[in-house]
Amino acid sequence: MRRRALTLSWALAAATVAAQDTLRFEVASVRPNTGSDQNPSASPHPPDGLTYVNFPLYQMILNAYSVRTFQVAGMPGWTMDARYDITARASGPITSEQRLLMLRSLLEERFNLKTRLETREQPVYVLTRARADEALGPGLKPRPECTAAATPCEAAGTGARAAGYIRGQAFPMSQVQRMLSIVLERVVFDETRIDGVFDVDVSWRPENAPADNPLPSLFTAVEERLGLKLTPQRRMVDMLVIESLDRATPQ
Image (cartoon, rainbow, N blue to C red):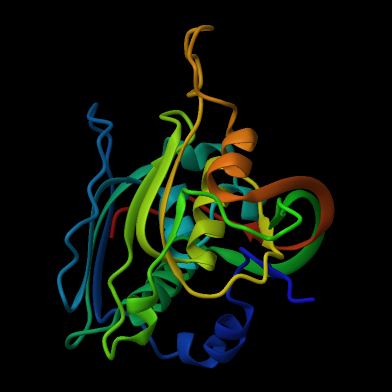
């Protein structure tokens, strides 16, 4: 049985360890932001670097390793309030992947960030088909033209647990899995064995909704609208462990 989980890109991490030794920004300015404004800004990034304004350190680390908070262990609490203005430039245009590798190098150099990869047992959810006939729900609309076309359809979507919905266009099951993992704040293992691309539309009773709200719970909505089932389990999952991290000095 195929088991796909929302995990760190271990293969990418292993393949790019050597590259990180050379992929660095040529110039970088790192300054603490002590203003009262709590709104961070990180986009759009210039093609040859990155710009963060009033950005929390913990979010920079999550961005650099493409992980969520539930995939990280050892994150110091002070990183939530430590905000920085960072401007960094390479010698020329860089790819998104190169930008992340350069950001990792910057965090290592200026913040003394040291990490390791580790596997730990954690509570997770397992996503399977809910129906004996394996029929999908009305909230998963197949888009066969997106896989048959020479140029695949561009995937786009949004969702939030507090708001009570996930909506997307041209989602592969891996993206459905990712969105569910984000709203549930746990790793989700995909064991549906579903291929193809889908438009997704599922709504549930939002958090703090009135008692008379007619929408079902998140888990019931996933079963009724998507024809899928989320089962809580404990499994070994990949984690990013922070071994050391310091506050950066202005530079």
